[in-house]
Length: 144
Image 1 (spheres, rainbow, N blue to C red):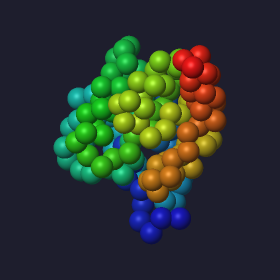
Image 2 (cartoon, rainbow, N blue to C red; image 1 turned 120 degrees about the horizontal axis):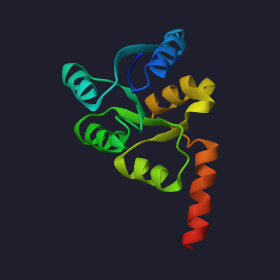
Image 3 (cartoon, one colour; image 1 turned 120 degrees about the vertical axis):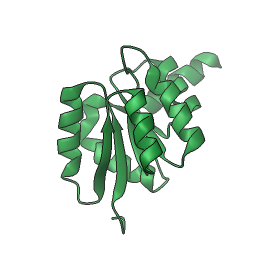
């Protein structure tokens, strides 16, 4: 366990998911939901107000892949570690997320492992989600 709480920003435009995720993660003793955002603008405003250790980032914001751009901006301007949180399992989206600076790519249906993903990102030891790693291996084999 961390000596201090992990300051977490959740960026998610689906209000039901945002509420559920916040409720789920707030039960973790070492994770502090420091802010939530539903838009890029809200996320940027939150980033200007305080520092976050980890950001859970939905790829799809406002019906497009704005989360990729936002991840690139956050990783270039802060020390926050970004975990992509999405339903998209498209190989190109996975590669784009990592190119933008994400440390992990987490599928929403695997929500029970999100607390450990947050802890791993905070500790700078993020393993890549096994399903995502398999998609990456498939793509590397195809490119070979």
